[in-house]
Each structure stands twice: as structure tokens, then as C-alpha cells.
Length: 285
Ligand code: PMM
Image (cartoon, rainbow, N blue to C red):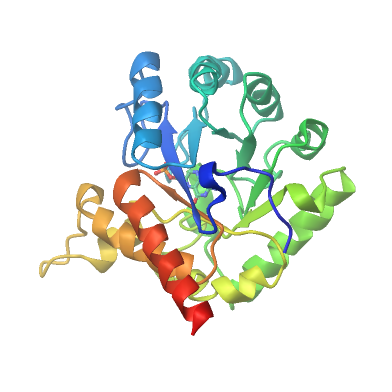
């Protein structure tokens, strides 16, 4: 497996925790909470206090049905927050599908580009990421949020996601990104229904066979709320699905995930340490 040059304080041999700061008015679970620049910076610093290894700053909501924001608006939302967090010594990633935002974010100090479209939304992205040399999260994606649910059609979701990711890898490598930069992500909830998401989680070992570190983003997603629906069938609100996120984190870390992307960092940071201790003990017996 390739190694991603994000140094973790203490050089921890465990799954990393990426905390989320959505600088948006409309993200699914935390839209509006960190829309104000000062609030976003403060929240990023709190996430680090709680144990985040990385803070993922995004300025565009990708919730199902979301409309796009302009380039100017996205830059105005994320760049000042990234610059301020970087100045405080925080390892920041930028959650963007736009090459120009990725470039400005890395110039402002971002140390990883997290592209939910895996280079499909902006053909310039792989070349720009190649030039920066920072790690690049290539997520599985089939189209923009406004119609992604209609693309959630698979005969064998693990095989198809694996093959589509492998194609993206070939393309970004051809554009100059190195193997050492690449992180893959199955893109839970992006053109996937609940059953697809569970099958992909169970398929982490097969996805890992591609040979790249894996990032898993299950936090507060709708499939958890559906699983925990009450007797009336009403999905559990995302605000009460953090314990389920935590369970996914522990199991994903156990299955070999490189990083989990979560909204509530503290308990997830504990969970990855539990999984690491369990694995270490297993290796010694
Ligand atoms: N999910 C969201 C946003 N960015 N990035 C990666 N790499 N993987 C994900 O699963 C992912 C992502 C949507 O979640 P949010 O809007 O609730 O933060």
C-alpha cells in the first residue's frame, strides 16, 4: 500500500480522523452552523482539541438535490478559514470539486485535496493536484447532487465502484498525480442507496485491494437514520445518529480504513484508538 505523507502528531499507527467544517448555509447535517468565518475557524480549532488529525473545510454543499455555488463564493467561503487554521498549525484539507479552489486552498496552507468527484467535475483538477504534490482523495462519483439519486443503479456495487475507481486512478496518474498522492473513497450516499452503502462498507477489504489508502465518510448520512427508524418508520434524525457513526468508525478502522471523515470528532477519535489497540493486541498473540 502507498503511504500518504500526512504526518500525524505522535506518528500514530491507526486510522486517522478527519473533522468536518462545512462553511455552507445548507449542508445536510451542519449547514449554517459554521457559515460565519469566525465560527468556522473556532469550530476547526475545537475539532483539533477533540482529536482530529485533519480538518476538512468545504464551501459547497453536496447534499442530495443541492445546487452549485459560484467559484467566487466558494473561494470566499473557504480560503480565509483555511489560511487561519493553517496559521494555527492545523492540518487542513479542502473539500472541493474545483481546480481553482484546490489551488488557492493549497496556497493558503491546505495539505490535502478532497475531491468528491474524483476529478470528474473539473478536468483541470488532476493536473492542478499533480502540481501541488499534496495527497488527493479520489471519491467514487457519478454526477452532481441534483440528480445523483437516479444514478444509484448497480448490479454488483462493490465490483462496479472498484472498477470505476480504478479507471479514475488510471486517469489521474496519466495527468501526473503520483501513486503516493492517491487516497480512494467509495463515496457513501453519492449515487448510492442505503443497501449500496452497507455493501460497500462490508466490501472495504475488496476496495483496499486496489492498493491505496481508503477514506470512509459515513458520518450522519441518511442510511444511518433509516437503519435506526422508529416503529412508525420515520428515519432517526441525523442529530441522533452520531452513535451509529461511531460504530461505523470502529468497524471501518478494524477493516483497515486509513481515515474516517466525521462531524463529531471526540468519540470517533476514541473509537479509532480502541480499534488500534485491539489490532495491536491481536498482532501480538
Ligand atoms: N461526504 C460529504 C462531503 N464530502 N468527502 C469525502 N471524501 N467522502 C465523503 O463521504 C463525503 C465528502 C457529504 O457529507 P456532509 O455534507 O454531511 O459533510
